[in-house]
Image (cartoon, rainbow, N blue to C red):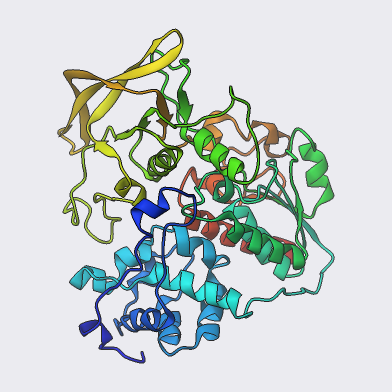
Length: 472
């Protein structure tokens, strides 16, 4: 390490967010960045810790100590090369990853001041694009063809890795644009879509073929697709949201979170919607059911649309601030997370379950909720109990942000049984994902809904398996 004692004198410095009064008036990215000098100082804090738990905790296996040291020494190009060797798209993870690496940083565990790994990662790749370190690679073709179904994070990684190995890769996407959750699920204020376009243009220059507005099983028969390629990788994601089938669910004003988020992203791309189709929080009281990141994204979107009030409720107890003895390292810390969207104006409440949606003339006017209590049973498992304390939260719009069901549970892959008749584990095991050996799977289609970085890790694994299969 260039300066193994820097952590003793240099404290963690985050770039922070744009001023609140400014950022809520647009959908531009809220996160700022440090200048190059300060960024190098932050990289110098990466100590000679001996066992880099950050590397262990990173799903894609980033070599943080190596590229932090190069960054500290001002070797931006070399730093990017080390970063890119393990992470295909650091411009995505550097913006939206919850950074499990930082939760495992020795400086987090010992002094509660982890290295700014995620921000450093984003800075490195932006310099690489700006300075022209990233240029199209022209692989030598080997004559074999691979189809990838789904152009989300996992599918893009599979395509990128196999394309660079010389395979001719075609990516099929049912939406009108490439990106999956990155484009249609994550708000622009967290990930501007020109960042995606920049990468997709590069992948196209490198020879990857993208076929959009094409749904496999509907526009192209599954058997025809499988017969046309040497290998197929299924990266369809887990896009079926968990519903809340309580009384009043049919009322106008109750929506899934992604209905709001994907529509708003499309509007920013120039799409238009009819009055009946449009979901807009302007002048309305908004209630978000679900306390995770998707719910937080609905908060920020509703604030920007002009909601008069935004409330977010969660059925689980309020997690502790800062430290949680119940989830010590190496477990992922379950602590209170306050996002930039929460800072923009939101009432947050916990221990509430939804009983029924209330309406007048078919329109939502409120939600009846009940307070719950959590207790451990004789086996130490948490059990929920109703308290009988009910109230009504006024709401004109409700967004359900309670996660997603596993693809296999909803029969999303039912249409693929033409190729997976005898295998029950297509959504579980990428090693043997179909009744024909040349069909593989990766990402949320194998794990259920998870982090973007974990989907990318799944893409890396599947690409390696496909290469091994085709090489033999």
